[in-house]
Image (cartoon, rainbow, N blue to C red):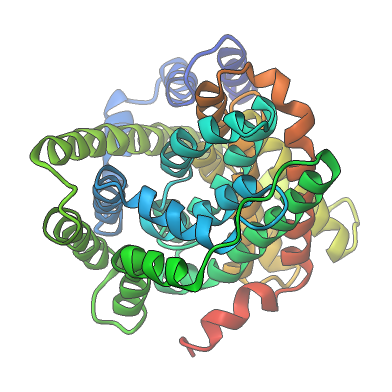
Length: 424
């Protein structure tokens, strides 16, 4: 019966059923056939969400919405523009650097893709960039939004794997920057090959002015990491402080966060939190069924029984995660693979924090790959192009991203060195 549940889950996905409902529906079918009391479903649906750590998620989403609707994105875009527009493919480079800056503000790849793309994609098309390349670079660079802290996705991973949120935030800094820099170099290379234009060289005064204008926004991730890492506040308290900070900056410093924008930010926070928590709740039920049937243990024993060397086993896990990210949303993937892969990673000697970041980066690449890449979907909508027409331009970014993930996998210090400076 368990295999029928798994098959029905993928069957529903193929027919376009949203992931949350596919997981919940297939698990509910199993529970009803097996005669398990439905009260158990209600218990599993809600009990594990009664976590103080999960309260950080709506606060992080709210802080990001305040920043986005307070026109913070435009200030970061202007700063990025003054720093890299003189490079080949200047606007493409601006898109990458802006995503890196927005990552520390919004903590959401989808929000970054929407806010950055709405400004830069039309401008890139006007300057002669192809629609497919404009969408591809906006979608791919936005993945750093959930890798560079703060990130609500990191909170979910930390909770599932029983890891420190503060340490995970620190561990994501270098990997996020590496992916961003790799995409920046790739963009320059492609732009030289295709002859995309450079923009005018900025003056020192322009750079300093844009740094001053964006300074309050850029201070947010530094402030947040500081209060969490040094024990001034928990992750949830830090998220609440971040929301207050974003409100004050938007409403009273920049004075761009009007009453209507505040209401819109709150509405989008309620919607975003509902989407995330619905996936969390249904994933809980689905994962509980799998664990009760011993599926994660069986798969782990199967992989360990292949007789592969440690480095080959790590490679197999990364490849599976990369493929899983292409066909399913990130949060359900976390609930599916953390119970399976974490014991294997620990068995081959990987640090749990190291593997958590490798898993996050591997699955994050799925955000800009067809057919379910949410960042790619938004970028294609903004560029007015069909998703399948971007595959040629998406592929180089996926390959480069996968190479960076492999470097992170086999060079643990890229992930663990920075946290070691602050946490013993």
